[in-house]
Image (cartoon, rainbow, N blue to C red; front, side, top):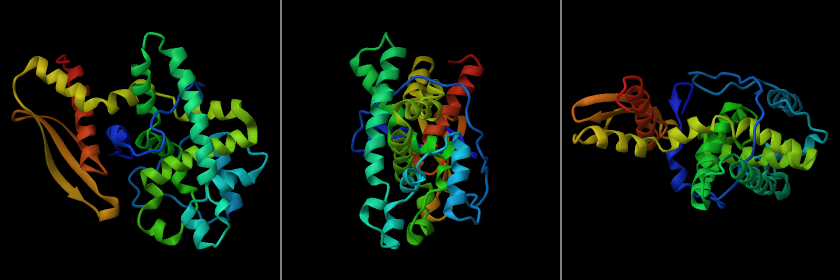
Length: 281
């Protein structure tokens, strides 16, 4: 899945080390808040503002106004920031993330149960895992530019923490927990439906793209499907890999990602799109 022409790894869902891999889903609202596009900017957009202004801007961004701003401030406070400022441990977002994780599990489970009546328990579990695993949640967080608003310690920020999957996914769950505390289950559910459980078909296709592509090429050819590294750019904390998916000597498509696995996944995804357009899949 592409964000600013860089693909992020939904394929890592199977390997995600989230504490609760079997988490849930729920049903959908059509209207989505405007997304501020960062495109190919060398760094994430950041305004010089105090945190109060930042909180207000984020509320406008997600179309939800907190009655108690402290819930949101806590959700946006990473442990590195709290430790650096010598706040009490309870001031970081870990406890709120724990709560949001549970709400997300319930909402997503209900959604899948109601929307996919033809799926058995194992299929529902796999679908839920693909939708709420760490890489997918990080992708959803990037869609609302959540990284712009997270409070990080200077060291964490300097080493790319603002765009790290684990930090983004935890912060998104913390925001869900904060909305639940502030506005109850209904508002938290609406947020999840709007920003996590949207565009499911697209997310599923990307999540399973390497497997799907392998099945497609096996049905039409005996040539091997391989992935070739074309380039590797950027510092260690912000790499960009470009990889080509090849069927024999034929280059099917090229993809980019922050990891080799993500680049392979995006190359496979683009290959499937190409093969479908040309009637080969």
